[in-house]
Image (cartoon, rainbow, N blue to C red; front, top):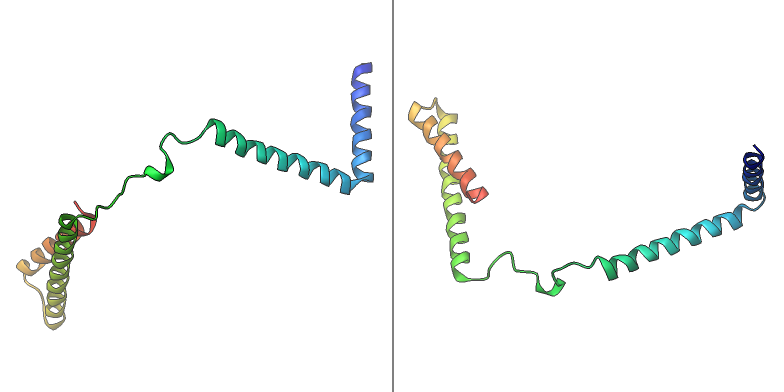
Length: 119
């Protein structure tokens, strides 16, 4: 029981010291935080560096002519699909659509989604 009272007395002394010296307490806590933050960065830099060097990141998009031409073709196909959908929209505003028109709209919408998502 004597040990418990000693610890309790020390805690009370610490609380009193904190209340009497708030600026000092703040400085000590900030110093501890800054040092621990710095140590975390040092540990990361020396022990947990990435396995792949940063300057050797592979290019996601190729600059080849094939890829550019394929992208241009997809864009032109998307424009054609959008134009046809706009024509069908204008037709719907003028009167009711036929069953073939509805099926065509569904097909064009699916084509547009495929072209947009690249699947």
